[in-house]
Every structure is written in C-alpha cells, then in structure tokens.
Length: 211
Image (cartoon, rainbow, N blue to C red; front, side, top):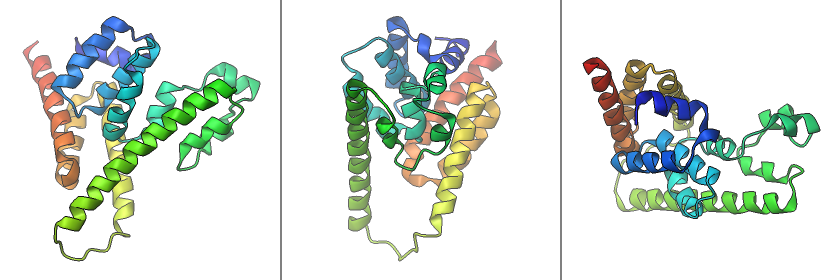
C-alpha cells in the first residue's frame, strides 16, 4: 500500500473493494489504534457486504474519535436524498448530540431498523468503555479535581484531533505529527492510541525522505 493509495481511499471511500479491504486489515493489525484506517476498513466491509461488518462496528466505535463522522461515512447523505426532502441540509446541520436520531427522519422501515441496530451497537460499545474508565477511577485514589471546567478543554482537543486528520488527508504529515504529539502529552488516557498514530506518521515521513 502506498501513501497515494491511502489518500485516495480517504477521498473516495465508496470505491473500496475486497482487495483493498484486505490491505486495510493488515494495516489495522500493524497499527490497531489508527482510527482513520479502522474507519476505512469498516466502510470497505460495508461496501462489500462482508459478514464481519457487524462485529467490526464495536471495535471501530471504541477507537473512533468522532462517531458522527463514522455514521455519515457509512451512511452518506446523497444528492437524491437532499433534493427529495428526505434529509435536508438543515436537518444535517441540526443533528443533536445523539446523532443516531437521524434514523427517524423519513427512512424506510428496513433501513431504519438497520440504523437502529448500528446505533445500539455503538451505544453499547461507548457505555462499555465508559464503565471501564469509571472502574479505573474508582479503584485508583487521586486528589479531588473538579471535572466541569475540563469540558471545554476536551472539546478543543477533539477539534485539534480533527485538524490532524484533515492534515493527513492533505498529506501535510509534518504538521499532523506535531499536533498528535501535543495530544499524546495532554491526553494520557489515550497515550497508546496517539502513540500508534505517531509511529505510523513517522514511518510515512521516513519513507518520503528516502525517496
């Protein structure tokens, strides 16, 4: 797999086929916390109607920093839907925090049920992750820290991670690497996740410098 191929798949995920899914699976095995690769793998499994699609949803939901983007990657808003009024731009922009409520917007019964299943699986994965984090915090003594003021910081860090992904798509790997290193230092609970992405980008940059 080349850098150009990965960039193309990020821009045209609807073209992913079985051969490319196999390549993405190998990349995920080498870099298990590389969220972009996992999202592309899930999209490829859906494109090819792979039987492993359902089981892979749980894994991807845990590693994915933005489940809203995952949802629209799997179920993109088409021009036909927009023109027919099934899903207007207004409804797209006004999606609430629990964006799975989109499944209720004039969807056929079978597709609506499919979206409900996806929503439930992602919700269960999210709850399982939250329960694990709560258990760790409960069993590990720590000084009292007010949690409310940290919310804006978390939102800012998520935005920064989105920026890193955008830079990777634009092949600006050096800037993306700097952002990921900052995130690695500021979010210790996701240090392994960011370390894996940093390692992947360093490998790409080293390959570019050799060529």
